[in-house]
Length: 59
Image (cartoon, rainbow, N blue to C red):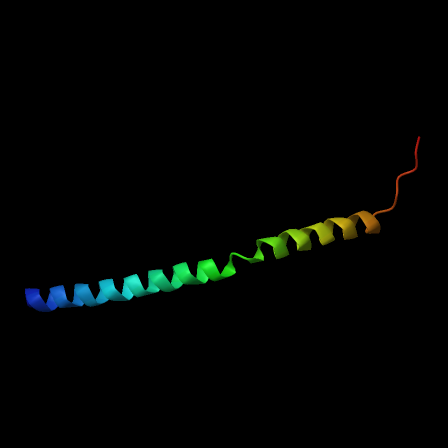
């Protein structure tokens, strides 16, 4: 393969990888506000488990 053609292919692939990385970074930033939602969800799971388990008798 001609060196200049090979170099052009590398540059094209580099631009594609940079675009994918930027899209991934932006997608990660869009999901950040879900931390409160996650904490509330796990709190509800814990409360549900406490309500579902039978109370132990005091000895």
